[in-house]
Length: 443
Ligand code: TRP
Image 1 (tube, rainbow, N blue to C red):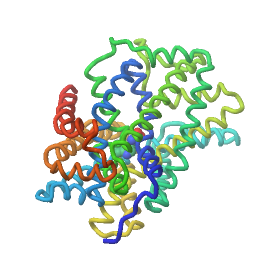
Image 2: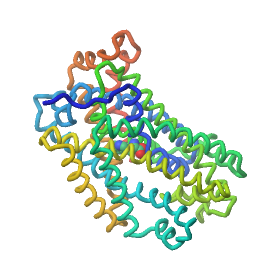
Image 3: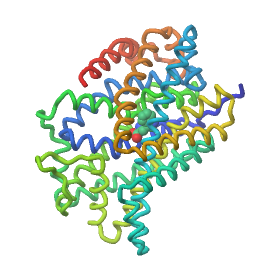
Image 4: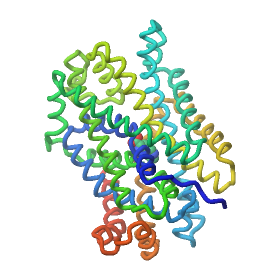
């Protein structure tokens, strides 16, 4: 086989992996979950989950990928060569799960496209069209989803360095900057500090098994774990990269963005309330329906007057970009498998797989009530933790310790003397699977 593409620089990799991690999960999922689960308590449990469970697994997934230097199916088979069929099955399961994740992700990302274009149409006097874009409807959902899928296909078609890496490195820094600016703005508004209090001052009465399960799911989703995404990115990483350190940087960036998004959205909710948007339901509980962000943010932009439309456009452009750097990492999993296992060209593989996923997405759009939530639960509450646990078991129990050591040592010569190596191997072997089982049975 010809030499495979690799990320051309360390920072390129970090931004691409962080680009995969940072997405709707951070900006839409995390604040929504925090708002409906008591704010600060959710934040704390989430942080625990990221560092105690997700980070060690991120290192495990990246290590399998880099060791394999191949698509996930082959990489998994290199870890356990005696079980080719079983490993093929696990890889396939990851590939199907991530394709299903993309099929609902593209629908939500499509809504963002709508919110991006609507204010501009409004400005041009096309009020009816603007309203159509912002209102829930089968045709709107379908068309916007297809546009977003098309964008994803175009980037992945260009390959690793020219597509994925180039776009991630350019767009991620802009995203971070805009977030900081918006947080500063929102904190100057009336009511913002009440939101900040909910977000940062814990009230232990909110702690519940459901909250812990949600926080774990959120951490898994946010770090793109358990479905071979990080494995395939790891396979494009060169041997001199320090895996534990790189993974820590990715996890920190991802968590940082989620934290910032919370700093923006929770205060923005209370500011919006000051402007008449309903954020509590009849029972007095915080209303955190899936569309919360979509009613709260536009209301915040309206308070900004003339610049509001500019900021709103910029914000939704960045949301779309954040979603795009995530969706490309999802599509890359089946694409890399098909290119390397079936010898298809990238061009052909991207189009037909993108097509199949669009069809699945279309089925969801037409059966939204019954399928949308169902697919999200099946993939994020079941597939991701279960396959993630299988990866942990593979690394902890099946893979020869010396092989793991050598793989990580390649980019981290002093590994054996490090605290990381004293903890991580048994941690992935015992603590991660046990923790995951516990959490799993809490639900
Ligand atoms: N982590 C991304 C987010 O927070 C989404 C994502 C990208 C993802 N790749 C994934 C989620 C793989 C689950 C599995 O939005």
